[in-house]
Image (cartoon, rainbow, N blue to C red; front, side, top):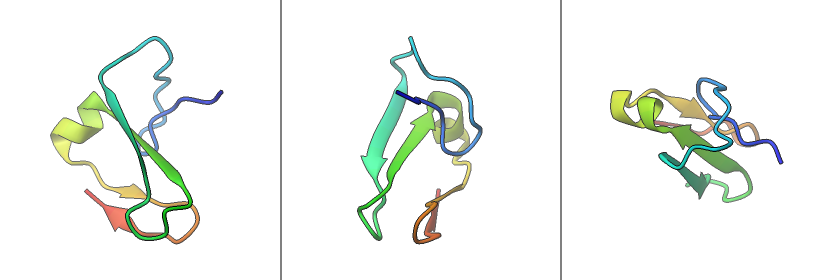
Length: 54
């Protein structure tokens, strides 16, 4: 299983301070955000529908 932050690409295996959710627009892609990107509100982009969110 590939568990990397959608925004920065950091490997999250073994970490527990991240979030994982479906794209709010299409619901077909899983977005994974590390704690650092969450705190900094770094933008992410859905690979399927190109939705951008904080």
